[in-house]
Length: 200
Length: 293
Ligand SMILES: [Zn+2]
Image 1 (tube, rainbow over the protein chains, first blue to last red):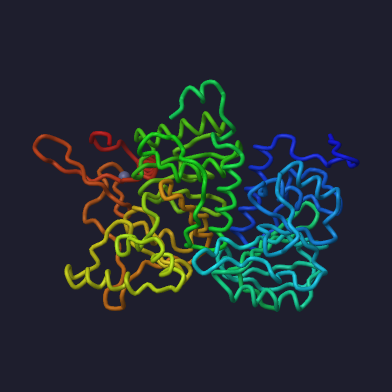
Image 2 (image 1 turned 180 degrees about the vertical axis):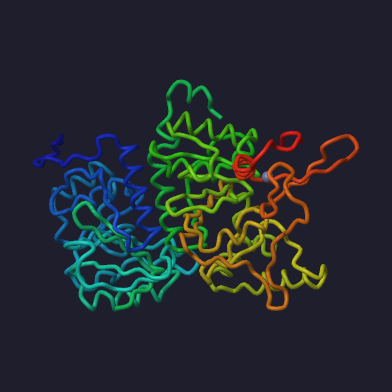
């Protein structure tokens, strides 16, 4: 099913929103509760533009008119914007600092720059960044430690260079402030909350 | 409870509207990302009977789905009025299977106890929380407690516990005993007996805490260190009993004392009814002749 708004067809959202969003949320909650664990999103609709299925399902589940969204230029297309506006009502903002959620690609520099990191008294007021990567579970393996991980976990995320992990170390050092990251590839995602320390 | 709305089918899946669920879900994710920190959430008052614990209900309603199996306990028991009502409520509005068996549940909503049966990875324990702020009795001003948490300035709590030792020779607190989560935030574990505190430490299950009146959600992710506050010369200790359960013989569970007849005869029984029944089933021979709890 698709909808038409202006000159574009709008990609379909969930067919049965209460149940599909519940299942996707539990997948995301499982990912946040077990950082580094790959979660497959079974209820992903066919995504618009350059978005992957997992990102589209994540957005449909968690964003709405109360959560400004920032799209990196490669995702800031009419197809994606119409999809977001029609199905979620989330305002698409031009500045990173205004965003509650963001969608970015792995191969750009300074992925954390200028986003809201929360405050010492309200660290929950920080942005959550979806970063699309080529594949999860392949690429350089790193050691993750922190809440949700029993001891340590070996986690591979493809497409991230050394600089990304230096930036992550800086973000982690801001705890309890800092952004939280969700990596997405195809219909899979995994979470990297700010409390997680990552070593080469 | 708006019973007519439920009978008319005029409610959304799991009772809450989707907008409210999304807001609570976002708060839950931030709570998991910052273990032990109290995330405020908005939304309107939820019209529910007194004693149901709207915070726990809202968290459960935001996470539960048709694939779940729900257990609800109140003071350890599955058969109290509140536990039965809440279980029926979710069976009706969320079309979920329910159970009294701890091991069979995917979501366990609880008030005042942690089950005796060790929890597993994949299970979610939802606590009903009356007062989320562990420093509230020591500092009534919200802006102040926020600042104390922000600065990890927990001396006021240490002083309070040490004063208890000076007065009573030990830390007198037996319920709602404060914990330090992942070495960072002091957290109220809700009014569970301190006997249950060690079960929170590095639990494979996810712990979610919902406070309805103050609208706070906080969380402890799996395998996260949870330390009960103490002092080198007064280490944390849990309750022990010289008696054992009259029904199952357990010596290692939390026991409730009961007066069973007019002469004041006393018995000790497991507070966790599921644990007790499973143990009775495992015992050989006929159960002893004692009145049911
Ligand atoms: Zn017993």
